[in-house]
Image (cartoon, rainbow, N blue to C red):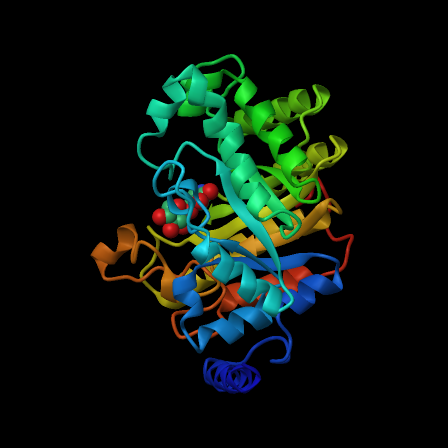
Length: 368
Ligand code: XIL
């Protein structure tokens, strides 16, 4: 492993030099820079990625925290009701602990990526509780004591569904009513008391009135949950941005994060990437726009002392899934992440490094 890592580092250095150099010495990594300011930098990954002998050592160098991109979703861990497959997650977790990295779980309760026939089980009063709480006990119990954090509930808020509590009209809501949220978090706390319990969602960094409303809805949801004693430790901010879409509103984001902190919540950026579809086809223009969007976002996020971790949703563009979004039709490969398909550090890597390095205080609210 050590020899492979050295070779990979040398390759990286050479390629980076060819590509115009890196801002920081090559021995510096996002993980090291973030750690200097008390933040964990991490990445989503998969067993497929770890099989790449060049990439795996780079991932181990850059990241201090890993999460499964899809192999710990319910449909993967419980492919058939009651039949569990912890193999891939154990592979990821072993890689993380072997390399001194922390590991987080994604995700226990979601409206997507569920095994077939779950609705059927939820329709039966006898099996209902087992289908939610029993699953959490099995999975969080399997990993007890080994997890940095769990995304307990993912993407539960959709004001457009028309409910006064703004909850998504999901299979969970239909089966339990709003109480599924409480049940999920209490069960997770009882099962693995040491893991940080996270509510994970998106859509709180944009500039529009719709974003204003969603920020308010999110804060209201979290405040009420905290008030009735639901054990939510942290807000997971996915951080999926767009390079050529609505820009991050730094002032509004700053206020939103302050409000989260005032609720006593910790903040984790859980799935950061920058969709670069829809703009110029010039790679340099795209890379600059991606890096700029990331920096606008991370400067604000890192300015809040409640922020404890920043994860990108992958480290290299090489493994993007599905391969190519809208712009593959225009002959363009997406470049959403810090390293390109050849694992060369892109402007996004450098801007992230700068965000991690910058010292507080640097935001002047009202004059951004
Ligand atoms: C995505 C993965 O990246 C894909 O590989 C998978 O096919 C679908 O899910 N919000 C989430 C993540 O919480 O789980 C999603 O990940 C992206 C949006």
